[in-house]
Structure formats: structure tokens, C-alpha cells
Length: 403
Image (cartoon, rainbow, N blue to C red):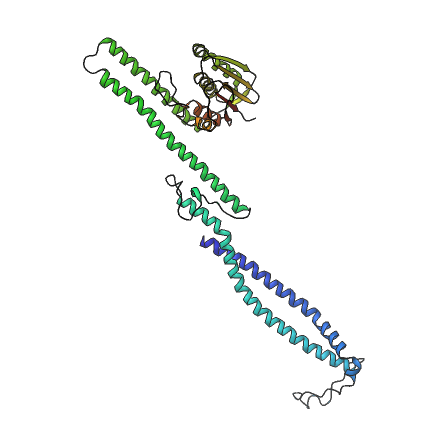
């Protein structure tokens, strides 16, 4: 920052010094132009012309040489002795005043130059202080100490610049917002890694236990069949988890190409695919498919609609209801079900988040459904929102596509 401060000091100091020189020059010129007439008027007013004419004729100066001039120089025609004396005195007063003005102006200009440099250095420091704070904060923070708060700093490791609105204030606020987003991303990444490790470690432990305990000794055919069925079930669950993680990763990379996709047809296929499961659970599914076509990936949008309907069917109550609606504003899925606290709704979009603790029951999801929905929607420049239903419990999830 030292180089920038020196350059700003030179710029500010040069501008202030230039303004001082111009001001001094303008004042000198204006005073010089009107000084003679002002002195003449003042002297004529103070000493009238008739009194000047009564004064004795001026004697030659001692420094004049008699050999050169033995008699006073003749005055121009029409010039009285009083007027000549007035002009002589005015010239002398003007010369003395201008000399004094120039001397004082140069002294003041020199002092002003020193003061300009000092003020410019101070001003440059004040202007660059937010930049120094931003630089120091960026250098200090990292993924490990993003939440660290050194002594004397603002809470949560933010700049929190206190100042009037302006470009630097907006820059500091923007940097604070970026740090907040980085904090949320780092926290989500850490939770995701921990949850993924836990979710993948559990089926591995189950498989190991089944192999070591269930197949110990000389198990009979029935026992081997049960262990085999259990191992296949755990392997299928692990495969679904891995597929979900891969899908999340691919969605984060964005779409390579976009093609028109009829969302209302996608929603109809999702309802049809889950009709048997909904009937088995006693869930009534209604569909209001109004035309909606968006540009995107057909496979991903199929997965989005399937996850929305599957989440509504599986997290429901006996004899519950699911409503699926598409239209110009997007796709909306509403279901009955357990009461969801309002503060818990945003957390359901995080990977491996569930409303209730996992019980390892058959057919239980891994907690990636809504996370995948949000990731696919973000890849399509869409926005996902969820609200807890006031009556009947459950959720209403909406996906709004950009126009």
C-alpha cells in the first residue's frame, strides 16, 4: 500500500500546489491591474490638486550629475506640478506594495506547499484504509479460520466498515457478503464430507458384520440365503448413495447443452412411475399438468420431477394426498405428512438431511432427494422454495424456472 499512498500523495499534493500557484498568480495580476488607480484616487482624495500645486518644485536628486542635467526636465504640455507629484508618489507606492505582495505570496506559497504534502499524505491514508483492511482480512482468513475473530476485529471475521456510503463502503460490504457465502459453502462442504463418509461407512460395516458373523462356521442354506439377500440390499443402498453423490457433482458443473423439454410430460411420467408405490401406501396423487416447456437436460429434469413426487409420497401419512401441478410459473408438489417446523425447512435441502433420524429400514432414503432437486434446479437457472403447510402437515415445494 506504500506505493499507492505515495502516488496518491503526489497527485493530491500536486493538485493542491497547482491550485495555490494559480490562486497566487490570479491575485497578483488582479491587484497589479487595479493598484495604481486605487492609490491615485486615494492620494487625490486625501491631498487635493490645488494643494499639490502650492508645493515647491522638486529639487534634483543628489545622485543626479549636474554635467548631464543642469536644469529640471521640462514637463509635458498640460501636466501640472501637482499631477506630476501625484503620479510619482503613486508609482512608488505601487512598486512597494507589489514587491511586498510578491514576497508575502511566495512565503505563504512555500508554507502551503509543505502543508499540502502533509494533508495529501493524510488524505491518501484515509482513502486507502478500507483497502488495507480488506487486504489484511483476505490474507488472514482461509478455509480453516474463516470464523476466527482476532482481538479487536469485527465479529465473524468481517470488515464491517463503518463509514458513509460510497464506492469503498460498497466494496467492503460486498467483500463481507462474499465471506458469508464462503463460510456457508465451507460449512456445507464440511458437513457433506462428514455425512457422506458416515453414510458410506454404515453399509460397509453392515456388510462386514454380515460376512463375519452371519457366515461364520458352517451356515445352512437358509442362513446363507438371508445373508445374501441382506448383502444385496446393502449394496443397492450404497449404489443409490453413490449415484446420488455423482449426480450432485455433475449438476454442479452446469449443463453442457440445452434442449426444449416439456415439463408437464416429465411430471406425468414421474406420477405414473410412482403410482404403484403410492397405491401401496394408500396415497392419493392428483395431477394438474398445464403446458410448460423449458430449455435444459431431459434426463436431469426427469430426475427432478421424480425426486419431488417420490419425496411427497414417501414422507406422507396413511391415506394422505399428493398434488402435482405444472404451469407457466413452474412445477409445484404439495403433500400431507408430518408437521415440519418452519426453521427446519431450509435444512432439508442439505445433503443427508432428514426430518427424522435414519432407522436403516428397508426402502428408506439416504437424504439426497431435495439436495438433488436443488442442484438440478440451480443448473437450469431455476429457484426452489419450500414452505411448511399450516394445515395437514407436509410441505409445498415449488420450482420456478427463469423466463
